[in-house]
Length: 225
Image 1 (cartoon, helix red, strand yellow):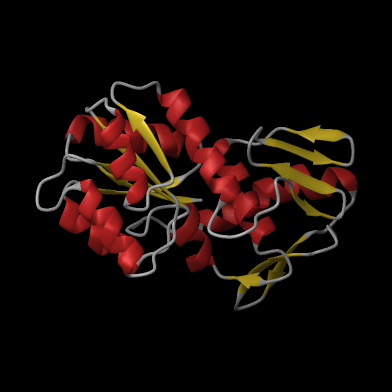
Image 2 (spheres, rainbow, N blue to C red; image 1 turned 60 degrees about the vertical axis):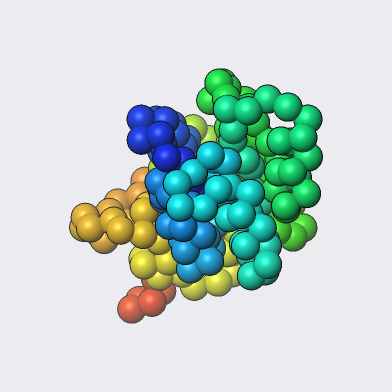
């Protein structure tokens, strides 16, 4: 899942990026309102975390402009202000949620996950393919009744494949949605994580859900393999 953080406090933005990435999200960061607006319009995000006090264009204006351009990614607004009118203005300009600084990262993470579950349209609470299930809110993965332990990155790759089950997705698709858009490492890292997933969700159960489509990418069988 991909998050955009628009925050001018560099240390806070870096901390949020590191925290979200540790939870398996791909994160882009902008430090000005104008850059945040551009990224929000050019890319597809599952959630936008948007500060209100920003250089160039404040968060209210950014939120309003994104909605004007029919960008419907859920928006959670951050501010150092604590007052009813600030919350009202945030929600009236199109935000979905509001959090006042200072805040607990765990609370922010819980709210982000709640927004992802609501999404831009209807999203199932639990992702399934046959007897393979993944719950984004509890980060639990099962084959039937058997729990499966995954790292954050493995979880993120599997979640993306499940959301696109039955479809062929390329390495570039996976890199763009699980790693950063500007990832400049070896794209074969995708093969490594797909192999890890097969060793955990397929082979122990004598399944073959994750298929390699030669020259195209990967497909997770809709029936779970």
